[in-house]
Length: 139
Image 1 (cartoon, rainbow, N blue to C red):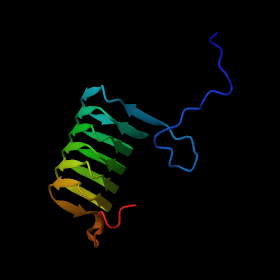
Image 2: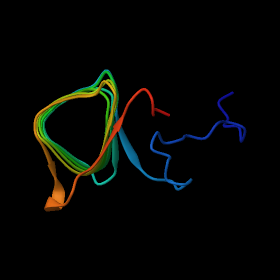
Image 3: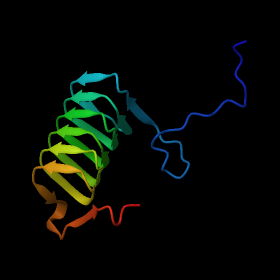
Image 4: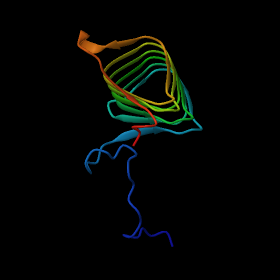
C-alpha cells in the first residue's frame, strides 16, 4: 500500500542547470516569511518574504517574492521586489523585478521592464559588462 515504486519520478532541483550534477539547494516557499539574516553555502530559491540580509552561492528569486535587506551572491536571478543593495558577480534582473538599492556586479543582464532605483557600480573598476534585453532581442 505504501511501497515505493522504482517508477516514481525523481526529485529535481530548480537549480539543475549544473549539467546534471546533484547540487544541494534550499527553498523558501511562498507561504513562508523569515525575519532575520540568511547565510547559505548552497543555492537558495526564494518564493516567500525575507526581512534580513541574504548571503548564498546562487540566488533565484520568484516573481511574487519580497526581500528587504542586502543580497550577496555569486550569481543572482531576481524577479520580485528587493529593497536593499545587491552584490553579485553575475546578475540577471527579470522583467518583473523591482529593485530599490545600489547594485554592484561583474556581469549584468536587465530584461525589458526590470526596474532599478539605485546606483550601478562595476566590480574592479573596469568597463561595465552590461546587457539589456529588449523585445527585439529577447529569446
